[in-house]
Image 1 (cartoon, one colour):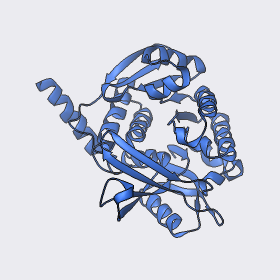
Image 2 (image 1 turned 90 degrees about the vertical axis):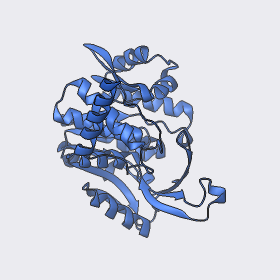
Image 3 (image 1 turned 135 degrees about the horizontal axis):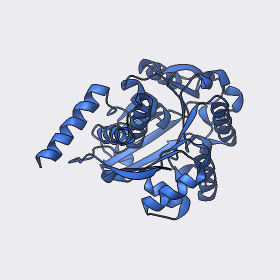
Length: 317
């Protein structure tokens, strides 16, 4: 196993007759969750990924696990909850820069995840454990599960990749700030956005943020700065890897997950750090070009073609 990830994936409904929920009478049904988005991105790039979670013993849960399995992700550690339902959410894409999300996940099966659901031997088989700041926001037992998963990873030499993935709707700002800083300090590889860094430290300068994050303990920090690309920071130094210019953004949801998948893929392949970040930028950019949370995640050929084409266009200009 290359990567194990842990968290909630939900059923996603998107309005079809109107971008606004209040006027829509028909909806498309898809699936979405940061952790499985990353796992899907990794499997499309040729890596092996496993997912730890809970789903409801309902028709949505059955459809969800069939879908995730169909994307080549190992679901042997997904528990079926006989009492709690599979979570739902609705997404309004009014424009490429205006997206609204409404969750119906309180009391969901995934929010019942507990440390007892984790198998240390399973996590120990992976090279990387991928976690986000969403899961600990769902419940106290989810928070404890993340801490236990991190403990298992560290006990077995598995590197921890943490994407803060701030969701202010899920918890208080005080609690979010405290836990995100705590988990950042436990991570080996940290993938915040500059906005998340500003939330955590009250600082907007990515260089100063990189220094603050490194002081917490990670060996590699990569800070996303939108269309400009991303900065990487290590004890040896830092650099900016430019992003790929896009004419339009169709759906920005899932771009950060694509970025994370690209970063982890580059690390697994052992490419130089600039190429690692470039792969993350490419996956993130492509994710915005297709409606849906995961549909735009590219396979290796598509990604390489996009990055080569974009590089040639930059040279021509």
